[in-house]
Length: 404
Image (cartoon, rainbow, N blue to C red; front, side, top):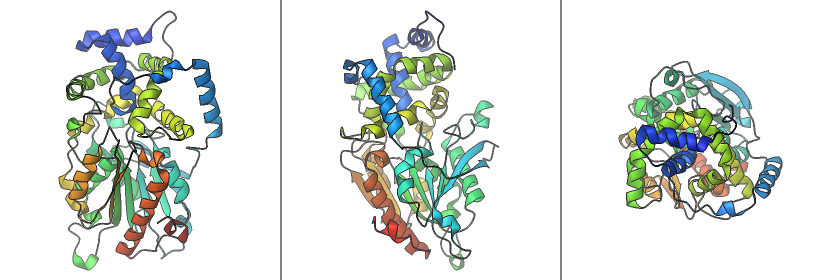
């Protein structure tokens, strides 16, 4: 991507274009253009970071980038074709793939969220490698996966399409054996779409002689089953209403101004970092290396991909699909300071899943698996134990059970 022409002002250019297209004020567009990058966030946050010298901030970021190992773990790479031909990037990890025939351990499939990629599961990947089969994949247009072919052909993105992508991944890399599905944010919505489309995988409609379906457990982390338009993003009621009204049009516009917006992101990195932190984490004591890692994940998502998926959340309504998950070992987890998928939505999902383990993590934000990794690992280990018992599968190894 190229920078703006010499002497030009990309911030002003984006604002001017948005003014002409939607009538939104220039200041409002700049706030939205930065805040949306985190995941449909809003303006109005105090920019305390700007009081620190820019040179000092750059030096600190460079030192963190050099020292932190986050996102460095890799597995065996392969590509899987989605139903429309889009190539999805997948990695197989864990020592369970080396088990002899006839001894099938759990296959744990991790589905990441909006504007992230599979590396957002860094801590869980490091902890759960022993004795399990782990599957990590980048959702279409995210990470190392190919840009959605149908979207480039003019069709809108949808959560239902992501459910079909997950089915293609399962068919390609884990066609047999018990499954545990773990989803964060948009990844949890992807799992709900799969349940809606293929209830037989979850035991619905399976004849008694054939026993349970292949999915033996689910984890829904920082996600929701619907009512996205009711989320206020931590804003006053009037501000949230205004944002929800203008954001779709502004995001769409920004997605058509890729080069200008990407230049704006570089110029406004300090401002963006404040938004990222506010909408990613709930506490102030998060490891600076982890905070920087989250910034890198979010910054790596181009604005046109942000625009591609932002409209899908308002259309996501999958409360009925939760009935398919009833009776399965389930974990529902969220931070009490999550502004994007508030904890009340996790409570509503848990009410529809009798027997589910509900864990509302006090003081944590949206990226709870990065902010409180030990707790998330502990809860996943407990889920894996329950799933193995439920399916009659090979139990997780002692290294995992010790976390429980």
